[in-house]
Image (cartoon, rainbow, N blue to C red; front, side):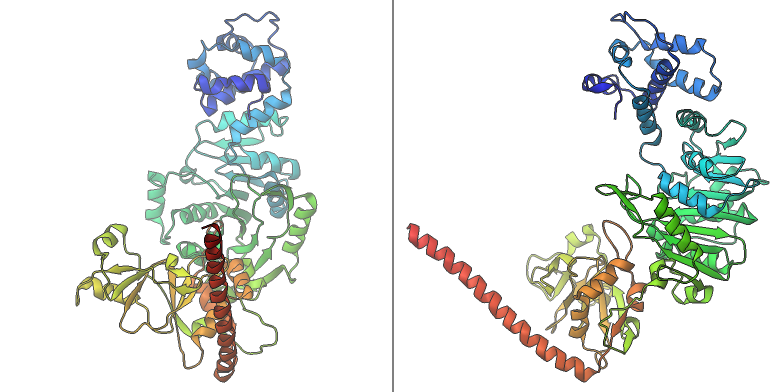
Length: 580
């Protein structure tokens, strides 16, 4: 996204001269000031114009922000002798808007909170004039500059370890039209775990989608040592620390990736929020709001108001497309989400008691409380949770180095079953054979994950269609299941295994798996979700009658497929005989 016309872009000066991203920004800023202030007046550009000429002019001017001045001189020190005559020739025909676009691209490098999310969070925070608004891991302060257009706060605080934050934020502020003065914005250029003990704030925001933090820092280690709470994931300590600085009547919003609200590594911090009544609301946001990732995000709103209930909002379908795979929130979208947040009981928003969240294994996914986790077929009245009908075990991961040692070139009674061995929803005879010694420790360990008759195999990730299989005719074989599959072992006295397999293959089940799974490219199915899945439960006799009719149709289908295959072979033979 270079700004200086196609003629200049073809020359690709930055690439040839080996300019870094920051050097690109510094040079762009020089052009910006030169163009805006009409500094450069040489109409007969020689073939030896250099960066030094612009820097000399720059140093004679009165620059109010010393951080910017130091940044420009430092970054371009090694480029003083670079010839920029070709750039200067095109400078006159280049718009300030184009230069600004180039600078914004260099500053943000795509990793910036979208303005529409910043506007929504500003509205949700309900910022008053007396509030201090903090942006943790602020980057170029994009959130604060956006919030300044909407909020009434007089005190804005940015916290980031990036050594160039003051210069970057000042450049950003200048190209945005100086939204905040130096008196309004205070910058802490340091590790967040090294803030003054007296530091506190009333309103705050932290985008944790792609934060970068040194998890080996002594400040974090010291903080961890002093805490009675322990968390499996280091990001949880960041949340814990930020919340500790929140004032009693304050509000904090975390923008989190989807796994944070439901997966096991973050269950400790979710438990902490519930036990201390800190969680005020969770809003699930649409996908594709960020230009660099397709994931859906979650706004987790924290307050110290002794929250007995939590507002859950599903805003996943409230957005407006800009272009393919990129969406935004219009003013109407923002108002709709805000109204859902304020509406206590509706189809897309609801207040849920803390006790109910605990029963749901501390799952913070809004759809968990707003949508039914049910494979719904309408007319069936009796439903049972899958967890009450079976045990669910994940297969075992055998390291590739170990697998290479035990693979057998000849047939044995031991085989290793992977997801790729499930073809057309049947276990294919493409499994690898294993060479294992009887009574060995390895066999004892692996056999715990072996198939039994009528086990159902379900992948850990959502596939379309769902790839699952029923273990049949196992006999004396020992089939060890890989870790990308779940082994579902049913109580066959009350439910028929094939009936459950058929349910898993249904469009209704696929919709549920998609809706309650985690991830973007690979949507994972959790054990907790499977256990809570409600399935229709007709009597065992009704299941048997259904299966008898279903298997009859399956037999007819297989006969037709065999006939189609045979016709294909006959057509090929006819062509061959005709040409010969």
